[in-house]
Amino acid sequence: DPVLRLSGITKAYNHGKPNEVTVLRGIDLEVGRGEVVALVAPSGAGKSTLLHIAGLLDTPDTGTVAIGGTDMTGKRDTARTAVRRRDVGFIYQFHHLLPEFTAVENIMLPQLANGVTRTAAKARAQTLLGQVGVAHRGAHRPAELSGGEQQRVAFCRALANAPKLLLADEPTGNLDPGTSETVFAALMELVRSTGLSALIATHNLELAARMDRQIRLDQGALTG
Ligand code: ADP
Ligand code: ADP
Image (tube, protein in one colour):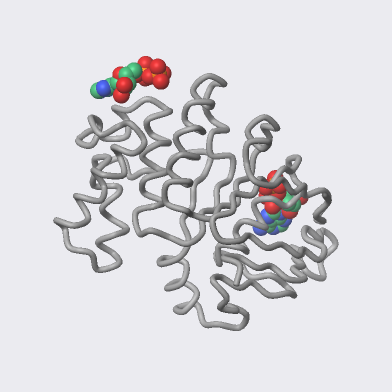
């Protein structure tokens, strides 16, 4: 089974109202094991909606979402949340780290929520920080880190529970071009070293070209 399979996904907002807008019009997409797919989309094309549906944060109007071969259609919120916490990691344009916690603590928290011991969670946090080159920043709070360092820590947090699938929405979109380049390289190394499958939305065609495959979302439909 592919790690992610979307079949016939449609989504509209404001159903039945004058401002009804159809955002996704029959999306079929598979992300295979270890595959890194670039999602290239102009603003407003429905990229965030698609990523939220793929990550079980939102439900489609029609169509099915399967993660690791498990069809999530019609599953209760508790089951969806459990699968999301175990199998899916999210990265956004902004780091969304908790400001009162250190880098290590931010990476420990999702592990503690999944029942990992403090000792094991801390060790894994430090290992992950080392993999993205910021081991020396573990005791720092987000405000004490540069933008690039903040994103690296957010990558570690997304991978803390060893998900099957990484969903990223413009992961380096908030960084200057030079920083974006090195931070993206760190993300790709982390993804490749863990064999993770990923769907990464980006406007940056140079970054998209370095992934395994590119798909384009245009007016709610996928093209080449
Ligand atoms: P993208 O991430 O590609 O910019 P989005 O998925 O955020 O696109 O949004 C696609 C379209 O759906 C936009 O026209 C947006 O205004 C609309 N939209 C998104 N979320 C909502 C919502 N909760 N209610 C109404 N319209 C929405
Ligand atoms: P950048 O060059 O990416 O914009 P900064 O100039 O913000 O980065 O920071 C340069 C270095 O100084 C980074 O390694 C960052 O972690 C560190 N740093 C920045 N602000 C603080 C702070 N308030 N406390 C500790 N270290 C900091």
